[in-house]
Length: 296
Image (cartoon, rainbow, N blue to C red):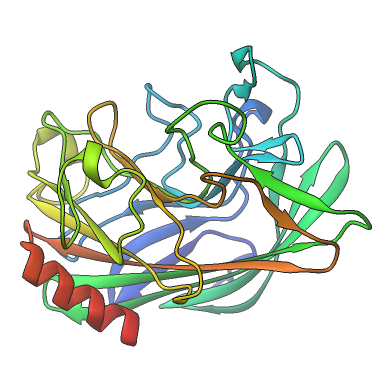
């Protein structure tokens, strides 16, 4: 058997079933801010719950970390929101470059990445990803990223919201779900609907799709639920960035109301645990599964 290259895509498995493919060195245009990503991610029954470079937002790349403003450099892709000008095409795109794997197993990996823009490394990232079985119909993706400022000066992370566009605090962990004929439902323990959930600092947030022919590129295309939990700790809970009507996507906002400073040599750490379940869960079911996932 021929050994795979060290940076070949990683296939994550739960109980022997493939549930996610992680691409380390994607061949992408500079405008998309090239970066490693997970796609496809599927339920245990095989229903795809991610989308890669869709027509509505070609810079949405499955599951990963994307930041629109690192000291003025775009690691999100697409246009940059400029105060008093709006979305603007700029030659300011950075790239996340796979360095090496410190660990690489069928159920997870530890990776080192370099965030580079204009020929300069700004951030060094350590990314830890693990897939864990929960039940016969649900598993959890545990995703931790640590961003260290490797420059000699201060850096800060911003968003369109901090640059003057209200409600657009995207940037950080981001999951682009597959678009279906009907927008997915979104709810937390105490509220529901995009308008109420977007910007909330809830313990967890669920996105539930009905399943349709458009979502059946992999597996049965049945109903599905994603339950996201920010597990960084009680001292800081980032708001959720949520879209359902325009497109289905969920992220944790690193810079919601103000820029996030990262002084030289210091590190910003975030952990997001996502339950990936077949079927449409109710609140009690979602809460029980996410508690189990976060505690493992």
